[in-house]
Amino acid sequence: MSQPNGRGAPGQMMPGLPPEVRKDGEPGWAGGLRKLYNSVVEEPLPDSFKDLLKKLDDSDDA
Image (cartoon, rainbow, N blue to C red; front, side, top):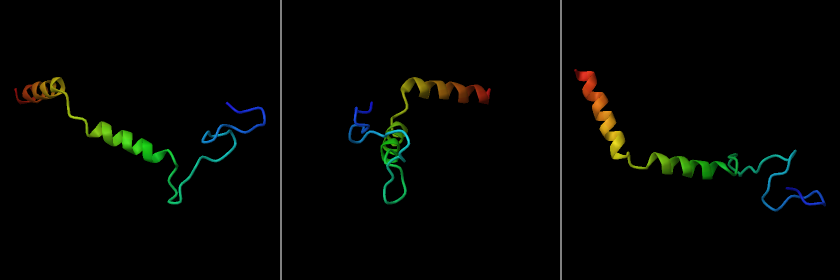
């Protein structure tokens, strides 16, 4: 929310202003999104999913 003088809190994006862009042209939020995506991709597959995939593979062979 913006303050009475029209200035938002530090680090907050204000309407009408461009988002933060790093020197390499990447938006400031992109690094955090990449870290989140990579952490999800690197999570091990739960055993229940492995069992389901095995059942599906076995049913294709039948």
